Image 1 (cartoon, rainbow, N blue to C red):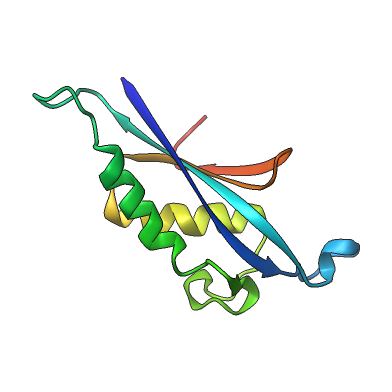
Image 2 (cartoon, rainbow, N blue to C red; image 1 turned 180 degrees about the vertical axis):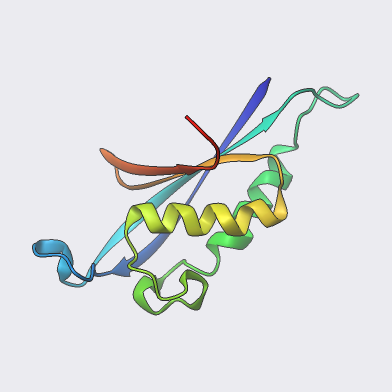
Length: 121
C-alpha cells in the first residue's frame, strides 16, 4: 500500500458559534492542510499519483477558503467553522476530484490539528 501525502495552506478568519472563550471572537489562522491518498499499486512509471496533480486538486478546493471569512463561505454550508468541520468539508470536496483520498488534516497552528477520514477504525 502506498500513502502519498501533500501539504498546502490558506489564510482565513472565523469565529466559533456556541463556544464560550476567546475563539468566539473574530480571529484568523494560517491553516496548513495535509491530504493523504492511498493506492495499492503504482503505474508503469512508478507513480501512484503525480504530486502536481494532487496539489492542483487540493489547490482548487482551498481556493474557495483562502482569504475568506469562513463563517460566510458557501462551500462550508453554514456549518460552525471548527477545524473538525473544515477538515470534513475539504475531504468531501477533494474526494470528488480524487477517489483515492484517505484523509485530510487541518492544522490551525503548529500544535493543533483535526483529521477527517471515512471508514472504520
